[in-house]
Length: 297
Image 1 (cartoon, helix red, strand yellow):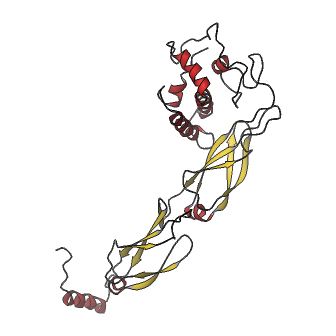
Image 2 (image 1 turned 30 degrees about the horizontal axis):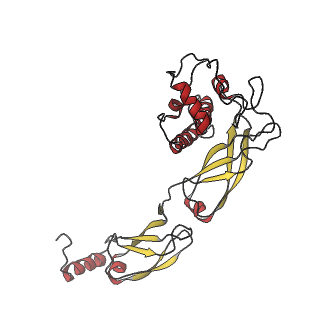
Image 3 (image 1 turned 135 degrees about the vertical axis):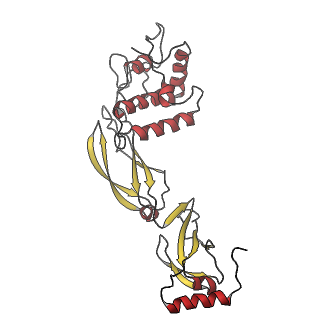
């Protein structure tokens, strides 16, 4: 069999922290998951990534693997465990049984068998997937359908409850929706990462929401009360006299929900109507002669 460089598979250095290894695993799991990946060989790649993470996430297994790797092995080298190798044979402790001969020669067969491994019920492994929703659904909460495709359970559709105020990149854990367990063990969980589409009107900036509101020149000059959209519905906003394009007004508590709700930042944008009639042109000429205004200094 061939030696596997688990650090190389995950794209991390041998001195990477546990947090670095976990981040690298999650990134690759999203990249090669059958639900999202269009790359050829993604199914084999995700198995390889899962195996590498299983070997390195456990401190004892990682220490034993590092001892072997320190002997000068490199990826692809012919490998046989040393005659006195004990590893974690018989301890199992991992959730996935579909690992390579290399992995099982080091740590035993997770589902038992000739190589020793743990017997009895075992929990199924977790699955990872991603769902993308619109900003309003993330703000208010919603129920969304997601279709999963994986080599173990085939294709299935789930209805997912999206909690109100979920932030982009957060995960929802769906208990029992992962891979099935063995020998009567419980199924794993589905870890569903939530992505949020960009919105044509609203921009999420941390806990704040930014919206650009067009106003007329006379509303800017004289002040006015206008209706402003928020994700929770329209509200009235008082525009102070003498406002300019780019002026920012704050609607407190109208931003993203949370323990402390964010604010909505209203950015004013003056829109000037086109003069199409003689009277309208005369109006602008009167304005020009009435003001000693030089915006360019």
